[in-house]
Length: 151
Image 1 (cartoon, helix red, strand yellow):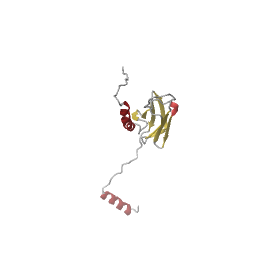
Image 2 (tube, rainbow, N blue to C red):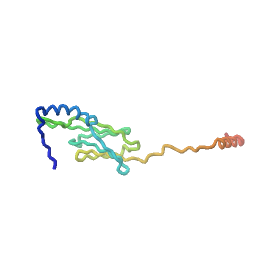
Image 3 (cartoon, rainbow, N blue to C red):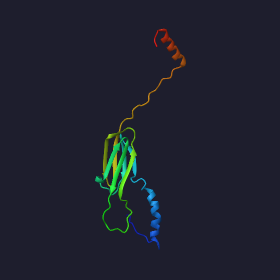
Image 4 (cartoon, rainbow, N blue to C red):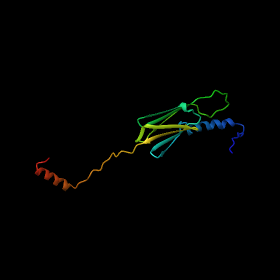
């Protein structure tokens, strides 16, 4: 069983908090929302950490191959002595795989994790093989065409 305990830090306990604050800001606040992704069958799955956010406070948009998640955590009106929670709006955009079907998107929120899945279409064959002929064969074919009057 895990238990949180406050430890006495000497004469200047707040000094350590002040020194840690700038470093804490660079850890994950730059991203706002942390994602992970993976394939599950023919679906591309994105999972986002959004603890403490209500499903009605989450917006998901898909446009031109980019998925954007916007969420908002509102401040509860309570008298506090200290808070390390982040409040406000969080937005993050992710570029989707090129074969993602933007019309087949599903989203489920459970226990602080938003899971978004999109169907991936089979990749289209965009290249084709070009046969390479020997120079003599190409010249002979051209000569045959001239002799019969074909161009």
